[in-house]
Structures are given as C-alpha cells and as structure tokens.
Image (cartoon, rainbow, N blue to C red; front, side):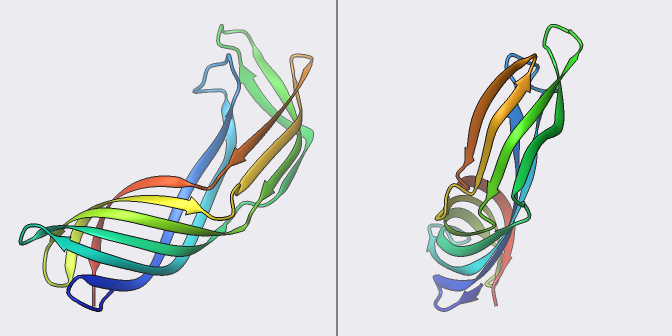
Length: 178
C-alpha cells in the first residue's frame, strides 16, 4: 500500500482463498459421507482504502479492491465410473454411488471486494488489523455441478449445484505501507 495522503492509501491486493465444495448424502452421517472439490482462487488487482482515526493509535479502515481471479479447477465430465462410497447412518454396510454429469467452471472471474478493518497503529508505516471482507463475484455462478444421473441403491436421481463465488472472510493481519 502507498499512502497518498495521511488517510487515503492505494496499492495492489494479492489474495489466495480456498473453498471446499462438498456433496452430502442425506439421511447419512454428515461427517463420513461427503466428498467434493477443493477450489483454490488466486486474485490480483488494485485496492484503495481510507482511514478514520478515532483514538491516537486505533481506527477504522474502509477499503475496496477490484480483483481478477483465477481458479485451479477444470471442467470435468462424470461418466458413471466415479464411485463415491457412503455409509448409512444406522451402521449398514457401505453403499456405492455412481455419478454422471458435468462440472462447469468459470476459470477467470472478476471480484469486487469491499472491506472494513479495525486497526492498531504500530508506527507511521505499520499496523495490525482485524478485517472483514465481502467478495462479490461479478461472473457468477463460478462453478456449476450438473449431476444428471446419480445411481444410489438401484434408484436414479438428479441434482444441480451452483456455487456463486461470493464469499465472506475474516482476517487477522499485518500491513506495511511505504
């Protein structure tokens, strides 16, 4: 971050977020009967922030970033060979589940991320802060999992999952400005 005035700063935001998107089978044990993809998002973009000092070393920081995001996920076709094994909650033997369908990915997205921080100024150039961020994905949905064939206990089902890409995060951090 670069200070343009005593209260206004601008700079570059580099972020990494990880999401686990799990499928749960009901009425099954939710701890042992889930599986899904782990999504890693890298984001880079400009950031602007404004400080509101309310005590000599304490204050609020209001900021926003406009980020270009990239995910590691790829589109995928479930062809029925992907067996997910689930166990019924009443202790019966495990049951195989065959999946058929597609996973669609928006590999590149744009995220608008407003944030609010409570900070403690360590020096003129450094601080520690508690920050809340709200990421708004501008190309949602980011991930669509369309399972048009789920075979479970000789029954066939369908389901479609949408992951919007929006998120909320809370951070404890350190900032150095030059």
